[in-house]
Length: 303
Image (tube, rainbow, N blue to C red):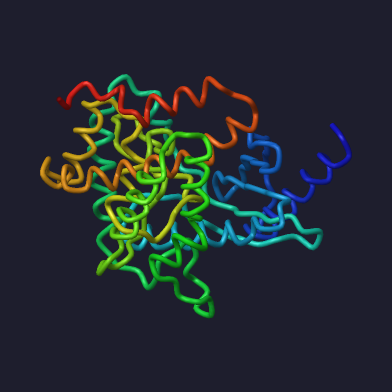
């Protein structure tokens, strides 16, 4: 174990004891990427997850995630309880949460029941209006954002459209139409909290398939609902799985048809950064994959 790893483990133990009030009896590292460190800790107070990150902007992200989780829990959405968010004197940001029991829903042989529940929770999450659009709302001194301001400042709509055009995935007319569709979504509507990645990989279930917790709220954002949520939650599901989610949400076919063009635009825009990175890395196969998707060659249900 390297010296920096030893120091981070010591920091994790110190953060945990200061937050919980008792020392950890067991700690083990989990996969977390190059900058995000994840530790599972046990103590006489229960099981916990500690995430640590050395990037300068991560404290803001953790605070945003805590705001989203706290809002969801107030609406009786099952989500992990956040114990503390903060940073160490040497600039390591952290978020400590209770570890929820269960296994990932992706391990289930039949996911239809889970997706119906997930659709129900999505609808409940979207019931309560929020003060403004965007990703972070607990700081009342922050400037309020309108939907166009969010699209410009946070979502970077113009940049995403240019990325897609630069790769010849869309033309100028399509880009203009996509911009209009997305801008119209927020016209005359109140922002609602969207999880932003409401998929099976972020759901923990018990042995009977009941949802114990919805995890990973780092992409949560106040946006038009259900369009923002559906564009992300549905795109990699089978037709039958899409039906299960939509049945749980209570959406009829006519509702989905009316917003289909906007959903397609949002889906393409969310892919823009991935496509640009693929092109930068010389991954021609990924670009061909997106080109086929955007050309709707996989739609076998519409004449």
